[in-house]
Length: 94
Image (tube, rainbow, N blue to C red):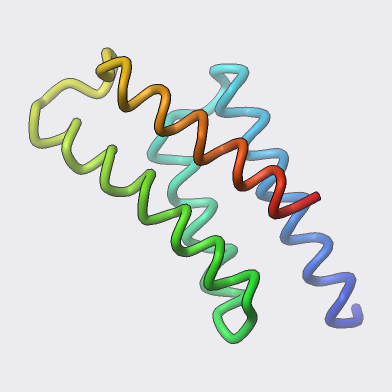
């Protein structure tokens, strides 16, 4: 596989993870783990850095929810921040 097809494959993996999260098929933790894995594979590239910055937003929301002990009912502002982050990720990956 060439580097560009690897990157394309990783981009598609992130897109699929976002779709699964939005469809309720995977939890926020799984989405965060998927992003972490992909951004680690792209560490040396600008795309990897961009993915990591979006990953951090989701990770922070998750950590706060975990501290509160409530991962099922996120506050509306967190839900909106997640949606904005996912929209930004989709734009980044398109």
